[in-house]
Image 1: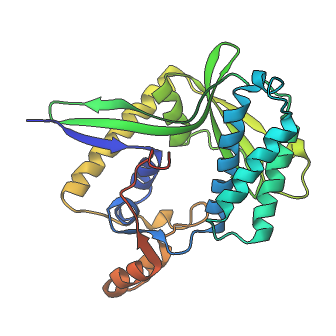
Image 2 (image 1 turned 135 degrees about the horizontal axis):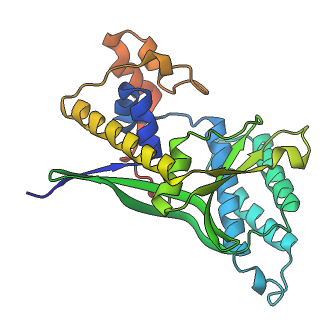
Length: 284
């Protein structure tokens, strides 16, 4: 008999560890996306689109002079791509201009950095996390940027926010990137939308390092959580974890859980839209 294949990524894993009911609502195949996308998602998406274009062009910096292009030309080309992308979003004009201005400040601040040896951009990959006679667990990731710095492969994750915060060292996302690439360090590229902070305060680059034993512990811990979740899914058991409702910006499904059980399905369908099955690489 063919083995059962389970695919996991950091977002699914975060949901499993937070609340199985959240996992069901977000990844169970029903309504899972708010009818109106939150502004912070769209701001981040717009910035990521320009950064993706920027580093694709920066990869070929040695050809700029040959093509009579300057750094300013490259930045403006990426902004044009950003404006085109923004036409498909619900962000108001002021928010769009804030993101574009932040991108312009970021590229000016880091114009002469050492991030030229670009190995991959928006790289999707997978690696076997666990395998038995019955089941295979594949861990997937999509890394914003992979560089070669001082001879070492280093993944980079862009993090944008309106508030200044240090990255979470324990995050599944960061450990997962390192584990799947077989490396021990990751750079979290902080990009702040704050208007009052200096560039050095809102454009910070944090290097997080993990030992082999830390990554092995993460692998074993993740395997346990996934196998436990598989048992719950097979028995259609989705317990609610009410201690997760207010974490970070609050659970997107909080209003559903607050509703009477008899009207939850109706409220879910009225507030959320059905989307395609979640695929970490679908945005390519």
